[in-house]
Length: 83
Image 1 (spheres, rainbow, N blue to C red):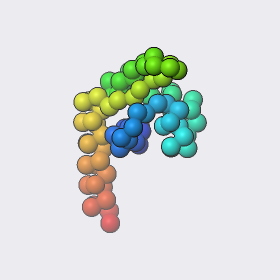
Image 2: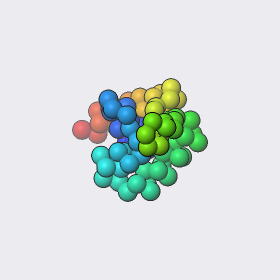
Image 3: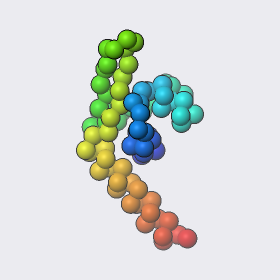
Protein backbone atom coordinates (compact mmCIF):
# COMPACT_ATOMS: atom_id res chain seq x y z
CA UNK A 1 0.00 0.00 0.00
CA UNK A 2 2.92 2.33 0.58
CA UNK A 3 3.64 2.01 -3.13
CA UNK A 4 0.17 3.33 -4.01
CA UNK A 5 0.53 6.17 -1.49
CA UNK A 6 3.79 7.08 -3.22
CA UNK A 7 2.17 6.99 -6.68
CA UNK A 8 -0.69 9.20 -5.48
CA UNK A 9 1.75 11.69 -3.95
CA UNK A 10 3.88 11.99 -7.09
CA UNK A 11 1.01 12.61 -9.45
CA UNK A 12 0.48 16.20 -10.54
CA UNK A 13 -2.71 15.26 -12.39
CA UNK A 14 -6.09 14.06 -11.18
CA UNK A 15 -5.82 10.41 -10.32
CA UNK A 16 -8.56 7.90 -10.84
CA UNK A 17 -8.48 4.19 -9.99
CA UNK A 18 -8.22 3.28 -13.68
CA UNK A 19 -5.30 5.68 -14.23
CA UNK A 20 -3.50 4.25 -11.20
CA UNK A 21 -4.04 0.74 -12.57
CA UNK A 22 -2.63 1.71 -15.97
CA UNK A 23 0.40 3.46 -14.47
CA UNK A 24 1.27 0.67 -12.04
CA UNK A 25 0.49 -2.31 -14.27
CA UNK A 26 -1.86 -3.66 -11.62
CA UNK A 27 -5.31 -5.02 -12.35
CA UNK A 28 -8.11 -2.49 -11.89
CA UNK A 29 -9.86 -4.79 -9.40
CA UNK A 30 -6.68 -5.03 -7.31
CA UNK A 31 -6.22 -1.26 -7.28
CA UNK A 32 -9.88 -0.71 -6.45
CA UNK A 33 -9.74 -3.15 -3.53
CA UNK A 34 -6.54 -1.61 -2.17
CA UNK A 35 -7.96 1.91 -2.47
CA UNK A 36 -11.11 0.87 -0.59
CA UNK A 37 -8.95 -0.48 2.24
CA UNK A 38 -6.94 2.75 2.25
CA UNK A 39 -10.16 4.78 2.52
CA UNK A 40 -11.28 2.61 5.46
CA UNK A 41 -7.90 3.21 7.11
CA UNK A 42 -8.16 6.97 6.59
CA UNK A 43 -5.11 7.10 4.29
CA UNK A 44 -6.88 8.54 1.24
CA UNK A 45 -10.08 10.31 0.29
CA UNK A 46 -12.15 9.34 -2.73
CA UNK A 47 -14.30 12.14 -4.12
CA UNK A 48 -16.89 11.62 -6.85
CA UNK A 49 -16.88 14.21 -9.61
CA UNK A 50 -19.91 14.59 -11.82
CA UNK A 51 -18.45 16.66 -14.66
CA UNK A 52 -19.23 14.74 -17.84
CA UNK A 53 -18.56 11.14 -16.94
CA UNK A 54 -18.70 10.19 -13.31
CA UNK A 55 -15.18 9.84 -11.96
CA UNK A 56 -13.57 9.23 -8.61
CA UNK A 57 -10.69 11.51 -7.61
CA UNK A 58 -8.07 10.12 -5.22
CA UNK A 59 -6.33 12.35 -2.68
CA UNK A 60 -3.90 11.57 0.14
CA UNK A 61 -5.02 12.51 3.67
CA UNK A 62 -2.74 13.86 6.39
CA UNK A 63 -2.67 10.40 7.95
CA UNK A 64 -1.72 8.89 4.58
CA UNK A 65 1.05 11.45 4.14
CA UNK A 66 2.40 10.69 7.63
CA UNK A 67 2.37 6.93 6.98
CA UNK A 68 4.09 7.42 3.62
CA UNK A 69 6.83 9.55 5.20
CA UNK A 70 7.36 6.93 7.92
CA UNK A 71 7.56 4.21 5.28
CA UNK A 72 10.14 6.14 3.26
CA UNK A 73 12.16 6.83 6.41
CA UNK A 74 12.11 3.13 7.36
CA UNK A 75 13.23 2.16 3.85
CA UNK A 76 16.05 4.70 4.03
CA UNK A 77 17.19 3.35 7.39
CA UNK A 78 17.03 -0.22 6.05
CA UNK A 79 19.21 0.71 3.07
CA UNK A 80 21.79 2.39 5.29
CA UNK A 81 21.99 -0.61 7.61
CA UNK A 82 22.21 -3.27 4.91
CA UNK A 83 24.43 -1.84 2.21
